[in-house]
Length: 160
Ligand SMILES: Cc1cc2nc3c(=O)[nH]c(=O)nc-3n(C[C@H](O)[C@H](O)[C@H](O)COP(=O)(O)O)c2cc1C
Image 1 (cartoon, rainbow, N blue to C red):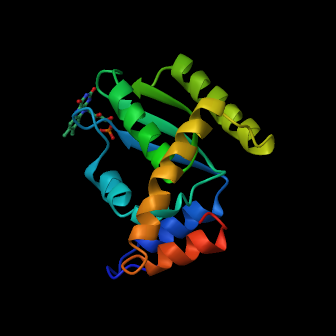
Image 2: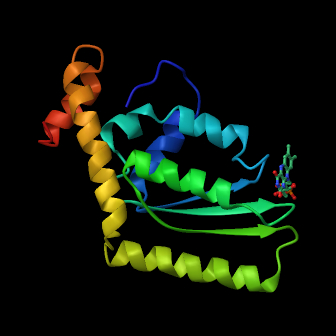
């Protein structure tokens, strides 16, 4: 994974590659994630092209003024699929967080741990991820020259 922009994004992405589970947490800013998290998503082309988060599990944690955070959780879920990860669930709370929501968050943490330990397959999600892979198979071959690293990775995985 190489990036001409030299900042801390590569170290963050390397940590994501080392992890079995990833907790993506953001406040709700106008029914979306923060600009800094969006910047990370927008630098994820390598993850997207190569489905680098395959086999990993993601959960979303969102805080807000209202507690109405479905669009934010759905967006994080979409990011997970796009990168090949399975989405275990999301928890959101208006601030200050109440005791019930804390319990929900703990249950979600346990679900994440269990998904990792048991290598859980969410069948519908895996279907979508496989469809995404099919879509990229053509693109990777067509852009072989421009996307040499991606092409090499796909070859190494025996996906082509
Ligand atoms: C620019 C901005 C946009 C926000 N948009 C929403 C929103 O659409 N819906 C909502 O419920 N809360 C919204 N909030 C409230 C934040 O989600 C809330 O302040 C944050 O989750 C609480 O964390 P904090 O204590 O670190 O600020 C917004 C806050 C800011 C600063």
